[in-house]
Image 1 (cartoon, rainbow, N blue to C red):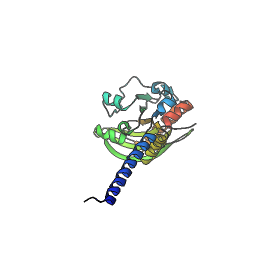
Image 2: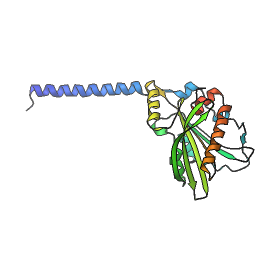
Image 3: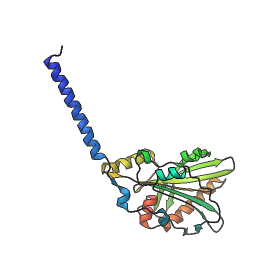
Image 4: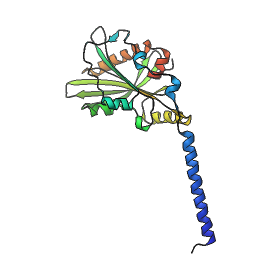
Length: 234
């Protein structure tokens, strides 16, 4: 038998539950991003932002690049707003492969795909992974270094970084905090993955070559392009 006191308690619980649901809905509406950072920044044009010739490097159009693209063309178009793949060569015949993937929306379904996942998906063996940094004249870029190989014949050391909004990050919690910070301002953050690699059994020499390449490329960019492609404010 339901007593008046138990009925009032049930009514209070129902009202409280309703208030909680309303508050949750209001909070979700308040913090749901509605403005794209990409639109605030202006258009991204990787083809124009990245010079085809700089320092000792020029675009190599004579040879097949062999750049690893972890997704099929349809998947790339679904995940990213733009991609850029090039091979550069210097006067000594040394080659560096460059791959950039940019997405206007970094919410969960559109997250960047990282090389330590993509390379093994293409049959590469991931031998090692470590955190490092590249010192350039305009600042320091946090990077990850990977040692990969394919079939015991192709040895490809990889250096990469990501930029979320205006900040270079190594991912993980730091990336999440950046996204949450933008989300609290009602902004949908964009993201970019910048990757360089070279075919070389000598991993140390490969990373030194990649660092020289990055230094010269970053120095050749405009300050605005450095901020968007490397997270550097200068």
